[in-house]
Length: 136
Image (cartoon, rainbow, N blue to C red):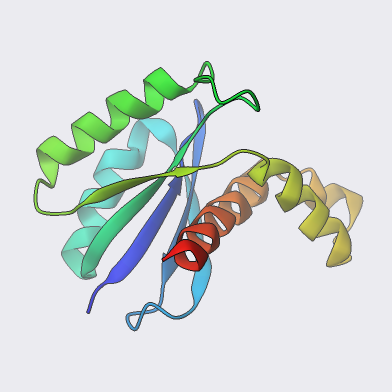
């Protein structure tokens, strides 16, 4: 059994989270510069078995596509060309950043740490992964 990898795709940074190999526990992996994302994923997938990828699908609260959805769709197409055997699942990502900030406050992180956008992206990816796992 391989890991499930979740992606919170952003214009500048992308948060990543993965499950353990038994697909029981999700956890933050890292945040990478979006321009380096495909190379990072290529390298990661050479070292680890990834069974599927869950991509946060940006929509507005009304259900309409958000401004970032086109960029995410382009990324998904590029990823699928490079890794055609790895299924990609789109997971609604509404409110993940808000929940990530709330989680950081509840965890008692300092104001400075809560302003770390890379950490917010990584936590958001973990939330996307957890939501996917809860829905299976």
